Image (cartoon, rainbow, N blue to C red; front, top):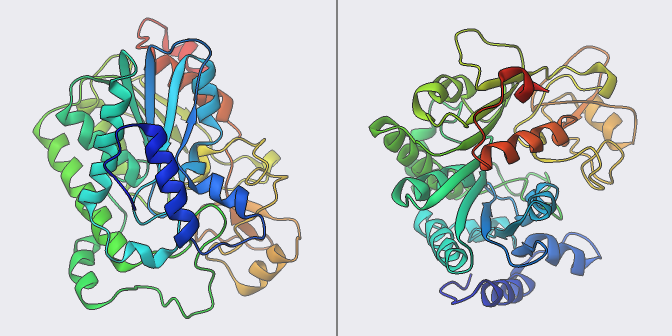
Length: 366
């Protein structure tokens, strides 16, 4: 993937051209797929004074931020979403990618953004959260962060073996199994090396967080039943590590005692939405999303359940929504790919980015 451009537009054009030549297209609508996977910009009215660079997760694409980015632009931000090298084309392109390739695109595009606006912010989902947090530690001019399901620590106790496993095998899941490798927006399977590079990002941010607190405003979003992360570890870090008074952690799940009023709770069991639990990815998307919303065009039916439930979901039957692996008698569960609290969550994020700290806990929770 080409890097080293002097402007975002050159980066966007060259990257889009590269994707077009390397992508395994999944639909007949190649133009839409190409747009979803290419770097993108959302501009506010007038001359922007603040900007935010958004970085997606492992195997994802800039489409990840298609719901929140326009809202940030409406509030005066010049918003840009990058594509991490190895993503946006086909999963095998991640076999040879390295974490320094990911760091480079974040560094280059943040530097370009800094030349165009007064105040720079960063946002990231999952592995992208690690990358922006690492960059912000080294660059105090970054004003604040949004961290969606930040992959600071996985829930896999043997994740440290991923770099060794990558030496011996390109894939942990057999790409010949018949399971879909990708869809129009993201990869469903990634090579062993991708997990190895993720592990390097998580180790780096844990070391940084252990060395000193992060003292600028941060909005963190976590789901209690996230099947990817050790969310309790991250929750317990928040009050001592993310110390700015305006920082907030949104926790979707059961209330947890012994945390400051900067931790905001919302239930993740919403029977009126047929939601049993929140997922790692679902926090990002509005219920109005035309692809991932409850009335959207795309369901993720492969969700760690029985084949009977999987086939019921594929056939268009009524489903409930949950994190990966959740099962309940008499219910078929698709992956939760939308967030009923999206509007409230976005309002909290905007307050954090504005550095607000004077509102009462009651006002923040509304």
